[in-house]
Length: 189
Image (cartoon, rainbow, N blue to C red; front, side, top):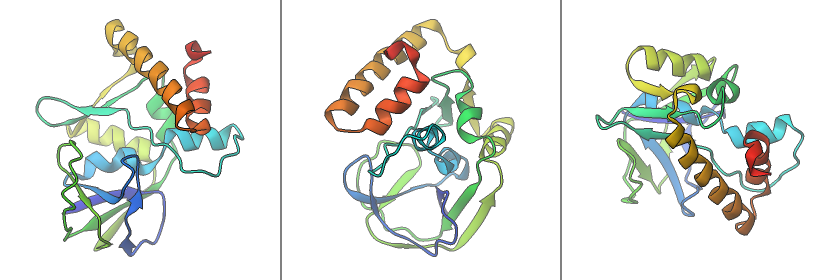
């Protein structure tokens, strides 16, 4: 089984879209819990909530990694980021039985990409993405590194990364990403 998350309802065939990698792909995981973070995009949500008018392609915010055992680790880069991004947000997890792997190296454990349309075989409605993520944590399927538990050394490293991302977003013309960074990381100003 392959899993794909989306806020969009009623998808019967998943179509490749241009992603952060710059080529049209559909992203899947062999683990349902690993797609929960894709039920919402923190950048898009923040911009809409603050009235930031943007009609371009949204950057994706994916603050996660994987533990040595291959379990997904969600990291809060700012206080209450997880709740802020996912609480009250609903969406859909689409399942596919067959996926033709594109061969594109995404360097993400259990991930598969397809450059061809994929038939959806089932769909699960997720009422509250935040609650689903917390349940996956309770079940031992993912881990969460909350901001207040993050070591100071890691917080400093993240500040450096955020500054680099902020400058990169200017060069690549992503004002929505810069707006998000300015709002969530006040040290940037």
